Length: 270
Image (cartoon, rainbow, N blue to C red; front, side):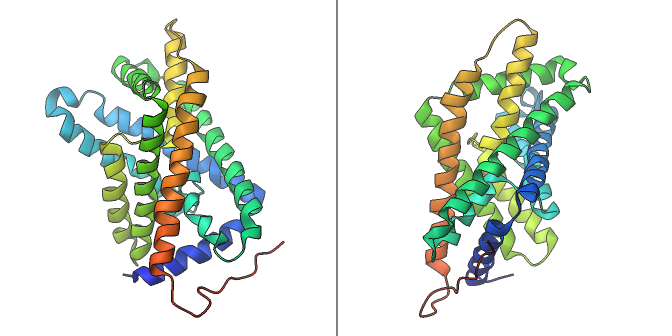
């Protein structure tokens, strides 16, 4: 496995590469990542929608955590782009603050692309008839209601803890030289955020719109305004803080190589 210093250096250079990514690559990779997270979400619901009645809440959450890790595994190993994972790349600003505009631009593009991919999957699955299964439909509606029932501060704090773990999972996976080791790292760390019901902005881009559309089909209305203002915004802000500050910056300072001038900054193309 790589040393913590090697992991830090690798992620640092990946952050510089992220700044160079063309818009079309961010868009396509982001849409695919949104699809993968949505598939992880619906697969988790399908696998566990009636499990609690037979095996209890604890075991059900363990299975949820394992199944949902499909999302990060496929995104990282396929080379797609996830907004929450890209929060690690704030370390690109370590030597040159001039890159802040480019970083924010790429974050915005990627965030929008993830949202497009998530919403696209909502409608694709609608055409499969999966939502017609009552137990799955009810589980999706209940999930959306629980998320919309959080206070602004609860959503924000759960967002911090979620991306603290997601970015930690990426860092743990980076330590492994073999794919099997990476997958094990992703499963156990991502599983922790799912088991504790922390909030992931991209996952919520699938879960809550799905609940809203399903409720509307039953003549009941959940609010898009509540979704955006009371969930997506605080969760997104929490995700950024948890991933960029508590993992990205913290570990960069902890394990950066102690050269006289720190890690050498490579020039980023115009």
